Structures are given as structure tokens and as C-alpha cells.
Image (tube, rainbow, N blue to C red; front, side, top):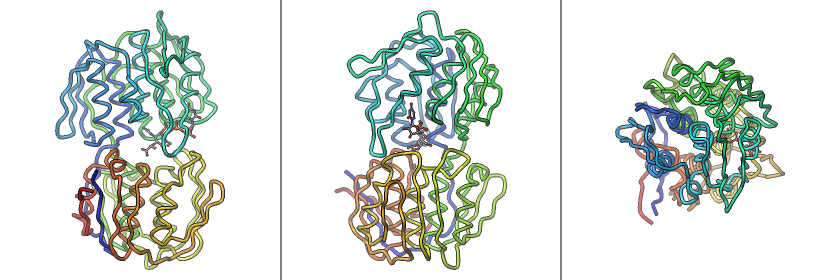
Length: 420
Ligand code: EPZ
């Protein structure tokens, strides 16, 4: 296994180009299963989660090539509708093939994803909605066996909780259903919006895009065909680099971003004392004179994103005063706390709320990544700590950050990727 060796403290300065959004690419790639003609998707990040989904597609019988961030894929002649455990267990977002496979073929078997480090991650809301659309759902030998021999029919779906991939699964299922599907309490994340926009461009009529009430007029099993498109920039990767500049008191310009996707994040950085400039597809952060403590409560978009919680906790170790961070979406998304404490951070946990006192001079140490965003938080802390910080188990990082250490080195970080 590899690990990252970071020597701090450092000050990051310069420009970095943000990659395509992993969490947009995954549902959009799943949506190509609705098509019976080739589709080209560009600006896909070359990260482990994308490779995992392509491995799954290969087992379904997809024909594709993926190079330089561009995927040319043809799902006209699939040979299987089974997403097997060996793949789904490594990436729970594989559940995104459930909706499109069921809608197009009338049956599919998808391994139950199981939980992960940050929580139990149930899919009950996905399954309940598909049943409302006429599917029969059985759980057999650890698989979801879904059938709808006469196709799915439109329904009025009210999600008890806002679920991103749940909304995406049902939008894709509704695209080929017979009649109208209303989705109430839908997720509004930019990744959900792009999925709707690309489906709409391919002829699926969708009303309410960008709101929490969607209406999808299905094609009654007529395959749709997505027009060639580029994936939106990754707002979480962008937020992570903004935090890297803020925590090291450097100035950074991000290129190929959507500033409007980062309003809650940039507002919080400004509250902490940073200065932000933006135009259509760039964002520049100038550092605070001294970082100020802040309060965060994670919530669904457009509120403060849970995927930025760990990175801001690292930042809070350097902020003057008492910072309070409440994690409201996942029941176990504080795995980075004990690792940050190894670096010297002063963090008190009570239920789903962390209280931090700062600023603390962090000291380099060996730490262990536990999940994707926690691992990026440890890298940020290592940039600010004095001495050497070794971040182990960085296969977590590789799932969602393209060339993280290379991009950080370009900005002036002293960082190496080494073999254990
Ligand atoms: C998506 O996960 C993202 N993943 C996550 O990003 C992100 O943290 C999360 O949304 C919240 O924004 C992808 O888009 C691939 P949810 P998802 O369904 O869809 C509960 C990353 O770091 N829930 O919106 O799985 C669930 O337990 C990853 O890139 C149910 O109870 O999250 C959670 O408490 C981590 N039943 C809440 O809803 C269900 O059927 C939100 O989960 C579904 C969800």
C-alpha cells in the first residue's frame, strides 16, 4: 500500500485546475444504461470509483473505452443485468445501476451495498420508491432482485429523507416509466441537476429541475439517448483546495470551477476571515490575517455540505477561538477526529457535535485515512503541522481525488507518495 509523506508547515500558492465531479460522473454514467446508442462523456476524473463502475459495466457487457477523461460507451448490447457483490462492496454508489437496469430491462439483481465507515447507508428509500412504481423487490442471498416485467409506471414519490443517489435512481427509473412521476423532497445537489439536464436534452421531459419537486414524463420504455456532454467540475475537490490554501495562509486560484456550486463553502471561508474573488469559472482565495473560529451544521444542498465537514474540521484547528461542527447527515462521520487528535488537535466530541479550540500548533505524526473526505482532512492538517505527517491507507483518497499529491506539489507542498 502507498502512503503520503508531508513535511510542514508549508504555504500553498498558485493555480490548480479542478477535475470533473466524481459524484456527477457516477449517475451520468449509470444513465448511459438507458441508451441503446453510443454516448461520449468528457471531463470524467480518473479516480478509483470511476474505474470500479467501469469494471461493473464491463461485467454487464458494455463496450467502452476511457482515456484522458473521455468515455465512449455503447450499452446497446448488454449481456447481463447483475451487479455482483465483489464490485458493489467496494463502491456502494454502484446501486445507481438499479434504476436504469430495471427501467430498461424489466429485471436486475444488484448486490446490497452494505455500509461504510461513515454510516450504515441504507437504501430503503430507493427500494420503496421503485415498489411504488410497480416493481417487485425481493432481497435474496444479499442481492436486491428487482422485477417489473410490464415496465415501471409513473407514481407520486414522497421521500421521507432527502437522498442524493435515491433521487438519482428514481429520476433514471422514471425516464423510461409509463406516464408521469412526481418526486417530492428530491435532492437539489448540482450533480442531480446535471443528471436531469442531460436527460432533458435527450428528450425526457422534466419539470422543476433544481427544485425539490420534480416531475418526470417517462418514455414508456423507449430508450433515451444522451447527447455527448462534459461532466460539471467537482465542487468538493474545489472546496478541499480552498481549505488547503486557507489552512496554510496561501493564495490560490482554482480554474474550471462553478463558483455558484460553492456558495455555502466560500461564505464559511469568508466568515473565517479569508477573502474570495470569483468570476464565471475561476475562484481565488486570499488568506485571512488570522483565521477566526466558525460554526457549521451540515445539511443538504444548498446548505453546508457534509462532504466538506472533515476538511473544515482540520481548518478549525488553526482558527482562533471555539469552533463548533455539527454533522447532521451521517451517524459516524467523525472518524478523522481521533487522527487529528494524534496531530495535537483539541477536539471534544459530544454526540454528533465536535467542539474545537484553536489555534493549535499541530505536530507531524503517522495517521490513518478511514474514508474519502477524512483522508483529505488529514492531508490538510499535515500541510499545517510542523514536521513530517505520514497519511496511511490512501486508497481512500484515490477513490475521489485525481492526482492530489501532484496538484498539491505544484502549489508548493512538500509531499511525496511512497510505498509502505
Ligand atoms: C451521496 O451519497 C454522495 N455520494 C455522498 O458523497 C454524500 O456524502 C451524500 O450524498 C450526502 O450529500 C454520491 O453521490 C455517490 P444520501 P448518498 O442517500 O446518496 C439516509 C463522497 O464523499 N438514507 O443522500 O448515499 C442516509 O443514511 C460521498 O463523495 C436513508 O436513510 O447519500 C443518510 O443519512 C460520501 N435511506 C442520508 O439519508 C436511503 O434509502 C443522506 O444519504 C437513502 C439514504
